Length: 81
Image (cartoon, rainbow, N blue to C red; front, top):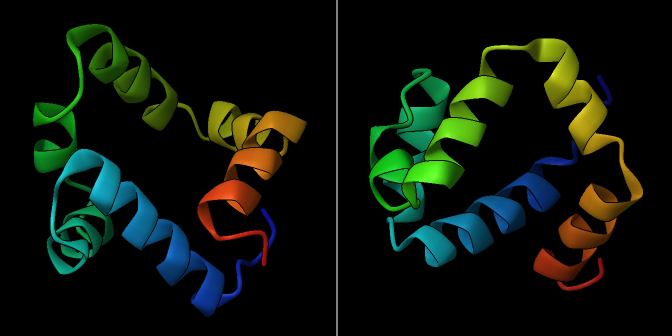
């Protein structure tokens, strides 16, 4: 998996935390600990189920983040930087 620029990762973290209505620091701590409780609580049931399925399969994660759609979403969320 490619290394992500820390500045870009912070921007993406802020965008996701805003979308999920979770403070960025809390989301970062949970993600680093492998916990997704707050994120899952703020998703619909179908989104939560899909997210859990992807997170259990590293190959799916890699496939997902390499898609043009994921790259476009990342650029949009990070302000095109």
